[in-house]
Length: 169
Image 1 (cartoon, rainbow, N blue to C red):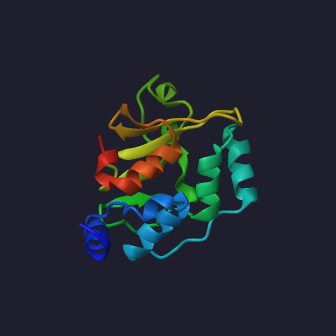
Image 2 (image 1 turned 45 degrees about the horizontal axis):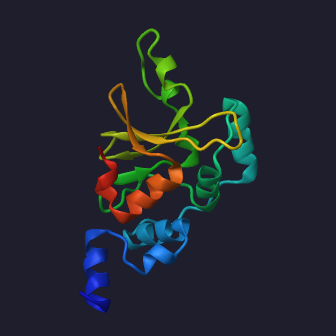
């Protein structure tokens, strides 16, 4: 399959085309969302990120920081595969997002929710730490279980762009 047909096939199925693989990750993400009719949301300010880091005593990984500085999620809109990437204002610790039983919240220390699939089934969280050089994994949150999805936020975005349903474990 070549040229036009290959590109059409890839676009219809929501997977990356060979041409897309050479483009920067965040550009590809914005292109995907625009193709799904999602209005672009301007990124958040560096001051908002510093406020968040101070409040939660964490440092956003470079890929997470770049993402939020470039885009502010999809708002209330979902893509063609029913993924919603939360605005920065909703980026929150797992421990604060749910009503947990005694002692359960401690299991989610350092995990922050940033997206969901089909309205919280599942949610996606990235692990943050207080270390600037930290690269944390991304996991799916099903009820009270965290299931590994990707070794980093950047790897999660790359997997999502290549095959969106592949990140739902």
